[in-house]
Length: 441
Ligand SMILES: [Ca+2]
Image 1 (cartoon, rainbow, N blue to C red):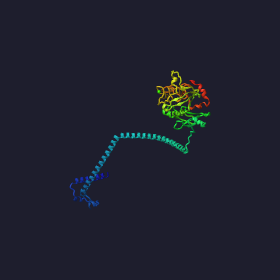
Image 2 (cartoon, rainbow, N blue to C red; image 1 turned 45 degrees about the vertical axis):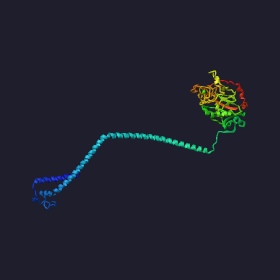
Image 3 (cartoon, helix red, strand yellow; image 1 turned 60 degrees about the vertical axis):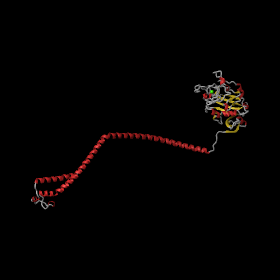
Image 4 (cartoon, protein in one colour; image 1 turned 30 degrees about the horizontal axis):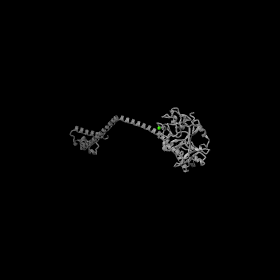
């Protein structure tokens, strides 16, 4: 920008000179010397004379080619600068246009994009807040888990300490053993509890609950129902091996097992009495005794046999009961001579499967008047609806005492050598008189 006035100035000077030469025509240096003046102050650039118009013209003519050349160069430079400036201006314009165009075309997109970014940021903030909440919850869980782990560690330490002590069996098993509980009582055992017995044909001894009374009688207990805590709906093998729990204080339910019953009851020369004791939901207790009770071997499906009803006040339900449905009721509900049946082994006299229908294992006929492995019904009374799909009576039944829709509260099946049953409280005398049963009450 500074050079433009210089250019203008030089051009003005040059144009003036051209103009003057044109006006003066043939001006020479000789003529100009005549223009001397007193006031003239000589200067080196113009010689020792004051410059005349022609002197100035000569002077200018002398320098004209140089000045021309300089001016051309300057013009060149100026042209280049102008070109450069123009290029720059064009570029700036282009850039401005581009920016405007960009703003016009892209502004909305950018606005939208920034809006979407804002949305994203808000969403992200929300996510962060929710994640923070989750973190708090997790921290809470972590704390509670830490506490639990501490508790567990504490327990683990306590258990470790306990395990370092020698293990003690809290179940007391009495030391006396014998062929059965009467044998054990005969050897001097005075108290009821758990004992090992080894019947004559048994390969190894097994645990039983012996009920030893003050008369020195030792009953070997085969079955116990007390509270319904054990499910008696078991298969053949389970009934064969036994199930439930033996306890030294006689508080648990169990089935000793058909094989053990067979071994115990068929020991040579020792006839047994089976005593069945029943308790109803009013707390009444009754019993029934069967002489020469035996359970056959597995090949005969653990068949039940006895010689006769030996007595008791509960009635002889094993002999069947006339329910009034059919004249053959009593015959088809008797149990003496019946093989054992389970849901998976049908040995009954019924077209269907009594054990499966009733959910128990028993010496089924078609099906029963006595059914001590039946379903446990709290309170005793139950209905066809309660009995499930089949709708048949499937409770703990002793039909000669309570009807078939009444389930006993407690039952016991136990055996004792016949020679010892009369040595006690004389219950058997009254029992025999009640032969035939009392029927429903
Ligand atoms: Ca059948």
